[in-house]
Length: 188
Image 1 (cartoon, one colour):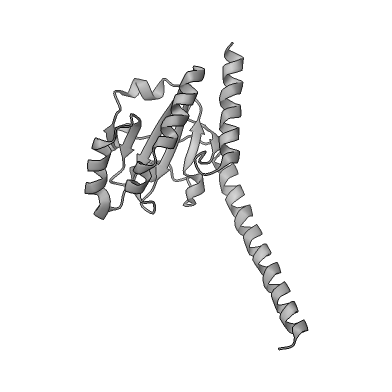
Image 2: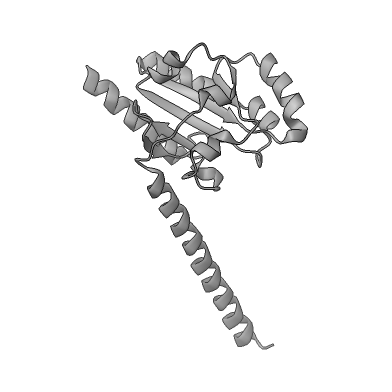
């Protein structure tokens, strides 16, 4: 192959890559937009609960930030990184905002025993549920498989007002803070 053929081939591959990533990005953006405004149900009665006192505590909050870790994610690894959420929760509390952080884990069957033990021994205090039967996704079939769409801020009616994981995306964290600050300012 001569240099011009190599250059043309590289250019075509680059263009093909951009088109494919644009299609993927467009599909992801569409999935996220479709989630906004839909209702998400946390099926309390079908999940193993940790640090969860009663249904009123969860349902009485102005906002719920639900973070779902499906079986494709290492649940035990995720549990070791919960300090981020603890810091965020404490920062939100210091503002006087009424936000519950709700974590739903669906560990793989082979890691479930270790995960449950680690969860019981976790020093962080957060509302956590373990989904051993897949009921969260069954009740919320509108949630796409894309892990980027497995975290959402819900209003008091359990409607999605923001999609995204603030831990993984600074833009989502900024949006989260804008929503919380706006609500706090409106209440004053």
